[in-house]
Amino acid sequence: MEKQQTNTHIKERTRIRLDEPRRFRVIIHNDDFTTMDFVVMILKNIFFKNEVEAETLMLEVHKKGKAVAGIYPRDIAMSKIQKATRLARESNFPLRLTCEPEEV
Image 1 (cartoon, rainbow, N blue to C red):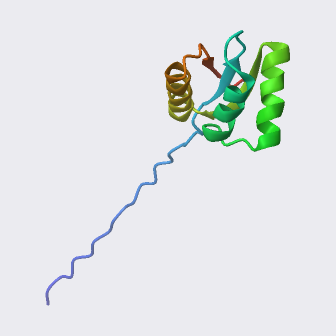
Image 2: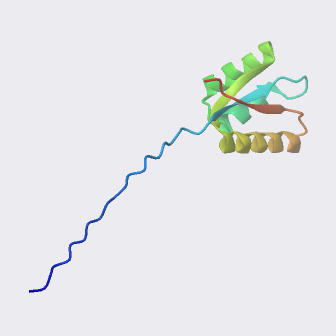
Image 3: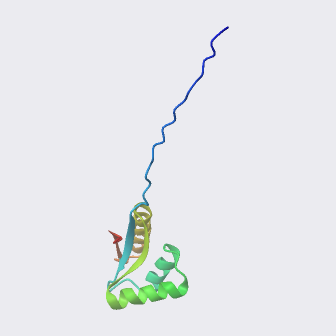
């Protein structure tokens, strides 16, 4: 009689800890040359704000000097900054946007 082989497989489970990607605040800064209408357009078209949100943020930028346009993973934040800056330069505006880590 042949001896039957038994295969015993041991599966090791490795726990992989997945952290949420760090998020970054995109800040839009006030200047004396960029028009309010242009800022509203940027907030609506690039940051997907509705009319009321865009106007509220634009007024915050105007009165306080800056406002958070949105909070995103780093690559998305940088992409939005690049798009907004490119549109501003094409329209001859010095609009400045910056990115900083969200405080946890």
